[in-house]
Amino acid sequence: MNEVFVFIFGLILGSFLNVCIYRIPRNESLLYPSSHCPSCGAHIRWFDNIPILSYIILKGICRNCRARISIRYLIVEFFSAVALVLLYERFSFSFLFLKYAIFSYALFVIAFIDIEHLIVPDKIVLPLIALGILFSLPHHILGAVIGAVGGFVLFVLIAVMGKILFKKEALGGGDIKLIAACGAFLGMPGVIITIFLSALLGSIFGVYFIIFKKGKASSQVPYAPFISAAAFLYIFYGEMIVRWYFNA
Image 1 (spheres, rainbow, N blue to C red):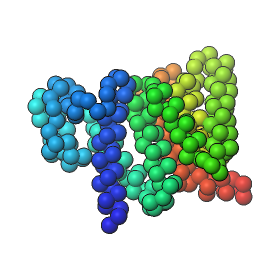
Image 2: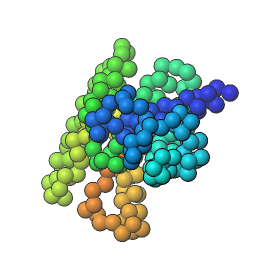
Image 3: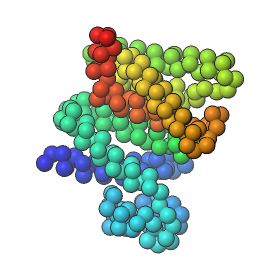
Image 4: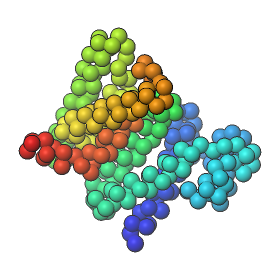
């Protein structure tokens, strides 16, 4: 029964994440004005703002102007709820549940903003680094600081090497700050596994994009979604991966 309440609460939080994803890159207030159609600006009434259900009933269009509403709203709400249930199953209601729920939701917002705008906002990622260190107090602060600094340095080195080898920017500054935030939450082992998994996920997507979508290798692809997905996977499977590596 707890899972049902957690899922519903996750849907509600997912609705707020959609507000963050839309408004933060546009430097708009998260509180005012109230929810409105991005096309016509019409106020969205409460019965049209029920997570997932309203989108399905309205068939993904605005009741007022009939403009198409991005399916991103549905995706974010659903996976926000699923992620919260998975975290509850893993950590129950605990300090770690709160820590990783905040971290995961920040990753959600960053990933979707990067997909839509090709940016990683400082107003999210910099406080996230500080939060990761605060959550490590008092016993694990050294590991958090080492993870943040280590992740930052590793990605700076990768960025410099990539620019030398490929004559173009390999990683953006936002990606570098994001891996530092991952290090603050996950420690240095988490940074290493996250970098490896993100590179693997990015490579798989890159091959698919080039072969099936007829894209170009030089096309700009947002990297924050792969970092975010890799970090989220580490929360659940990181310890197992580390044990497997050192026992292999």
